[in-house]
Image 1 (tube, rainbow, N blue to C red):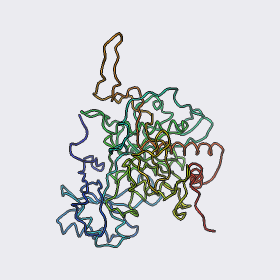
Image 2: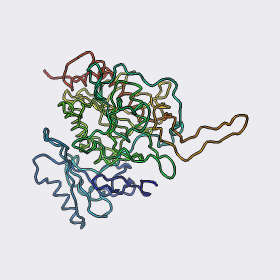
Image 3: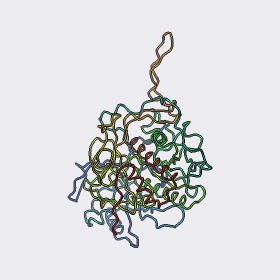
Image 4: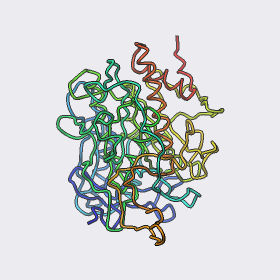
Length: 487
């Protein structure tokens, strides 16, 4: 039986239910501001407010309550809470819900935003629905995922296993790559617990918002993103076999996640990382995060949106974590977030040059966004691109791992003769491999390269601070120069 509702909805992990999803229509949506609207997908009855430390009460929240009351709407509030110790200030954030079934928040948000200045408008926004990146356009991506066969042995690790997946036998700490996606399924490469950090938790709570037991199938066959996280993990493992991979399941195989749920997940991931730095048992420092998902904002000019999601991504980087995001598969240049929060660059060959060096901060490494190329190195027609794209990596017809449990109801065509022959079963991935295209699979190529560079530097016993070390890795792999530090 399908676990997904028939109408567009997204899972709400605060109560375990489903929330209605809306598509903003620029031609019919009311707008009191002089801005250009664009289509976006959002949770119909949720807003996100970035609160200001020390403001109690918050004037913007009071205004929101007042405007809601005028509409006879009741608000419920959900504070963004950080798991674990209070060793660092919590990222301030609040989800504002319309209690009960009260329809759509767009008009309420638009009225409030029209009456406040630009700095305040940056603090409030829709609860966007991020969608995992795969081919969803009419561009010439050769089909969806297809069963494939990989010739040759599994990737070989340079170092033997240590006592934990993130440790090597020589005492070197392996680079840890967090795949924030649909989880990692059953596959021979990942089943002995030496490569994958399974069941990671913070205070007994999974880092992600989904259980690893969520099914990959529906009555109509495999769900659109079944195996998405497993495929990404396989790319990382092929590029950097010595990396430890941390699955963080933030969405089911419908490929959708609320901006709020993603933010809460990344907060827990940051806490897990900080405890790993502190050397607490059961925790490991995280070196790279892969995000193969995104949303497009409703305001075309809204490239300076300072939402809670942007804040937690910056907090991760302040702690020396590299964040890699896929650019999306719309085949155009309109910005997709969070990828478009990367600094604007000019790509020269395989190197990136900043358009404005001021965008590069010594306090944290840059967010890195990745477009997809064809096997011959040209930019794939389905790939988004623009000055906000840091680099390009292979993303068409990539061969990687799929859960060996993924087998849909379609059947091959059987031909009788001297020997029974049959066509390829189009949704049978029990062989463990598939060919798939998308920027989702270009991003983990860069993540693996970063992990490999981290490993080489770490094994050479270079002892520098985490942020400085992360910056050195970025410069070595992408060509981005380090920030200019004032004397």
